[in-house]
Amino acid sequence: MKKPALLILAATGSLFMTASCTQFTNTIRDTFNPQEGPAADAEGTFIPKRPRRTKDFLKDAGRLGAAQQALRALPAFAGKTIYLCQHAHFYDDGRIMARLQHPENPEYVDEYDYEGGKWAGPKPVQLSVRDNITLHRVPLDSVQFAAIATIYRNYTQKADSVQGTMPFTHAYIIIRNGNFEWYPQTISGSREIYHISFRHNGSIDLFYRK
Image (cartoon, one colour):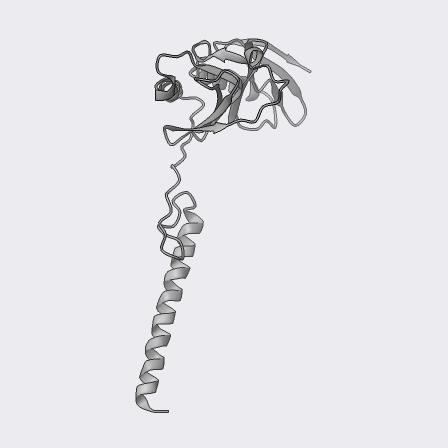
């Protein structure tokens, strides 16, 4: 084989090895930093980064209250009463998923998601003709997100005395008949199970072994 051909093959091989090494390095980086995500896909299209999730959200009354204030400030609800509908979920990594009655059409419900300190939505919720939204809604002002920090403290204090319990990472409300209840309402251990319920302000209402 002639020398020019050898040089071309060597250069091509070098470029292939460089590209492979770069791809391998990016794969390792993305594996250990999944929340960051690649800057671009294989075709060079930039992919938006996911909001960085946090920890200890459920015990931080200040951050919970700020999330509720941000919800009140959504432009679509300016000058209107905001109604939570059906249920709302709160996660220790900083996420919230809440359903709200549509600000213009009371027969509609939309879902709003909170992550990275911002609300996103609305996403339409499919309803049945049997769903009576009036019975499954409460004013946002009647629910204090910051009360979850009190629930977290009370639940954890009781759970610490029960062997084999799981960490508290998810709180939620269920809305029925114009009222709401906080959940979870069970503390499950490896040998015992307890009922626990909370008042609206997060204080313990009932606690007993089942």
